[in-house]
Image (tube, rainbow, N blue to C red; front, top):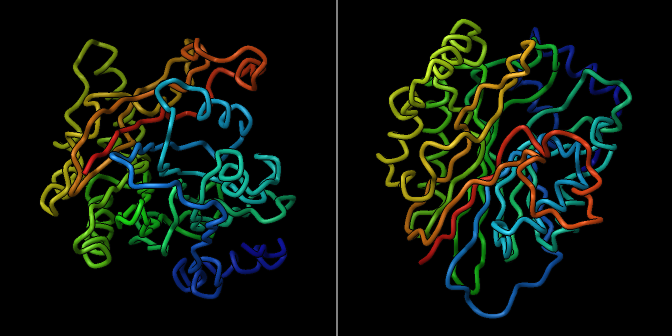
Length: 346
């Protein structure tokens, strides 16, 4: 995806307060593009199942460790499809690389990338692009981006940005069988109703684009059970769990889940419930975290032959291979999200 000089990015960003995000995004053609790379040829035959992973890789800042994690984790062997969130392209924080392109090359997969945000905070960023991607062992027949209803204006944030949340939709050719795949990143700086509005837009688009095909929707849905800007709610949930309360039934707080069911999607079969997929730091003296279930898979037209969640804490990677990137990595976690997976059958 072609970059934009920082001076022009900053100038465009300066129009957001007066013109709004949607108007400024309309002047930037990259926001309408879905980059598709089908470099890899399809495996022979039709598989009996599709091993699907959801992983928010936290910008790709720990790229080598992330690749090693995906290649060597016993639970993540023979991945067919990855629905991935938070991938940088041309950001200093992740080595100024195109994370999606390089990850696809390292894993031997095709990919589609959609631009979610242009970061404005660091003038040294060559591009400052940040988005989501679908990785597939099988050919991607087409892909498109769907920018979601705005529930928060990210220009007015310490992470000053042009853009907004999006989904990527792609049609895959899996051994002659058409499969719909949707990668989603919903807004955290809103409540359940806002995420519900975004999810409804996705479900309606998926219904139109994949009327007869099996469909898998996955990603980081930011199902906090509260508005991510609501600090008292955040502290209240932490105290509730620390006192020994059971994890909340997310479906009671987040319309995303029952809404998906009304559109014919199953979220119970393909997810471990409850399962903490995000560690949110409490920034207290004890270094504690609030565990939240934010990452999900929704399926229509599939059976589920297996599912799981894999911790990305380095201390839980006892299987790491000696001499590999994970073995050399000295951080506490590969990402602030765990990975989830399901084996989807026909």
